[in-house]
Amino acid sequence: MTVSASWSEGFETAQVALKEARFFDGVQAINSCMETYAKVIGDDSDRVLRDPSAFLEEYKENLKEEQKDVLRKMYEVRGDIITGLGAHKRAMLDYQSAQLLGATVKDKVAKTEAAAKAAKEKTGSDAKVPVTVLTGFLGSGKTTLLNHILHEFHGKRLAIIENEFGEVGIDDSLIEAGPLAMEENVIEMNNGCICCTVRGDLIAGLKKIMKRSMKNGKALDGVIIETTGLADPAPVAQTFFADDFVQQNMQLDGIVTLVDAKHLIMHLDEEKPEGVENEAVEQVAFADRIILNKCDLVDEPHLDEVERRIRMINEAVKIKRTTKSKVDMDFIMGIQAFDLDKILEMDDGFLEDEQDHQHDDRVTSCGFHVKGEISSMQKLNDWLGWILKEKGLDLFRTKGVLAVQGMKQKFVFQAVHMAFTGSPQRDWQPDEERICKLTFIGKNINRQELEDGFKKCLVNGAGYA
Image (cartoon, rainbow, N blue to C red; front, side):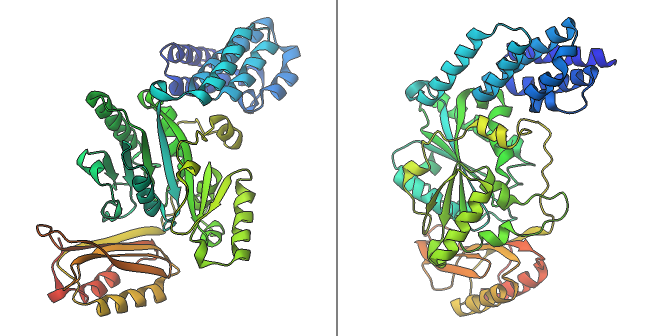
């Protein structure tokens, strides 16, 4: 295929996608054909997209009329596509570029400005279902916050998608969903990280939730996605533009990042292997709201330093200091804070379909799901105490729901590095099988060592489920 055929075919594909309102597919096609056409003109950079004013300043005077006409049409089509995705500020830049090349787009500019205003004011039955993404590094308090939301919004119709990193799911046992679970509005995804290997499953889950709501005639008040602590929020956010059905029926209300006041700086400064991103940095960078949690564990100067480090990454983000994830709901729900234009200014490759996202392969998990009971709290405390003392720096997250001999309640424990908390919680039901589930997430995990120690805590070495 010749270069000319390549860009012209891509441009045709982009126009078809625009006509069919497939905006995400359209932006892939228009970006590709414009970069190819820029090379025809003699520019091998990506300024035709990233910095169109500089591109046109250098090349406009020497362009043939035919080339100006092609670029004018391309910028206008790109403006239409970006408008469809909701990035009105960025669309204005494309329309202005088209105007410099002779396009008459005053009507489109006016419509774009009106659409931006309408998007902020859209409420009630005509509004898309708002989606809140809860992210944050392992152990920052996401599940605790989710339970606060469910209690505060009692009576509201909320759907939950919960993604967990680990062999054995624990968080589903910790979510106090109440009647939501009966309505099958809780979807658990623990077969991979939501930001990469299972993004298709996330789209399928969102569609399932939306179509069930439409079928039942019961409108949703919102959807909450709790990501794994190792998730990069960018690909999760991209989901709301990558699928046409999701884009037409749901809107990303905001990305809420919880950070652990005691451990955040350590995670921000962690050296990663070449090519591996630091998830803690990405989670702060993409946040619309940051909940600085576990403030009771550190002093005021440390909190000030944590906030300073956060603002080095995300200068304008709103920060709220909390303990045990307790925060006013109007700080995190119904905030209409996600701004595609802002994201594109920070990450101009955000809408690229093929994003390279690599996790640190030193971070693994191991989990145990056992029928039976812990023989005594003393044995459990001794074993967990040894683990946290000897392995605490490498253990990002430890959590479990356990049956203890002679105890009517479920013993729930959680640890972040060496900080541990645990207590009896809800009762075991008479017809409920007494089991033990626990998960370890961190670096340099020795599964056999953990398994041998855990077995010694069980009544008669109970068998694995």
